[in-house]
Length: 262
Image (cartoon, rainbow, N blue to C red):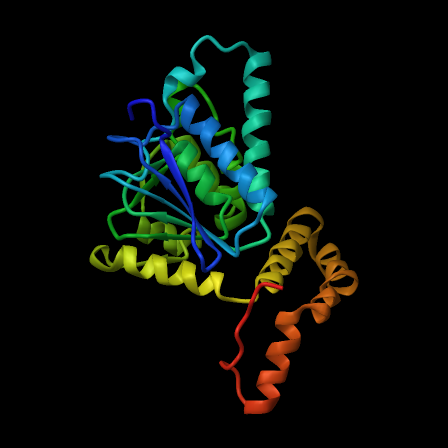
């Protein structure tokens, strides 16, 4: 893109935020894309939305990293780069709101690693995924290998990374990596509906769900149980819970509460 940012960030009145990769023709993760994405996530972390959708324009979701980013790096410079990018991944995972990644087509390397840091990955039937860093002598370094292993198991992660092959959406759904596949002609509409539904939900409860799962990943079942014992009860102070309980008791059924994210 001539001088402009390779991505857009939009905040909607509903509380939904949308990051759109828009750097045709390949949505490559060059240095500008990486810098702007880090800045976008930092901005959302400072003023969290009620949900975040990450999507892309064009014939591919992303063809991956622009290899110029790696040219001439020393090990020390590479270490600083990975530290910065893993910091971005960590900030994305810590957003106190549901995050959806929409993969409508080819989704490689950095883009897939970003997707794996999101809560939900949805795809079209024609989407394909790959961590192909082996072609330049690298291993995925933005957390993709370990986050793929969390979803699909370490054996599948080894195969995925070491083969450098592309894997289609149906296989990724079988592995538990892709959460849903929507028909191509309905994709944008259904992704938007999913993201808007999450944004309209009990934001604080969703944030606690993410926190408990993070504790589980870091410390196992006992750590997650401890988070429930010591932190989840804070939800009783939220307006959302109080109003939803009142609405349920008044109507005798769910579906009557309106959540405000407070």
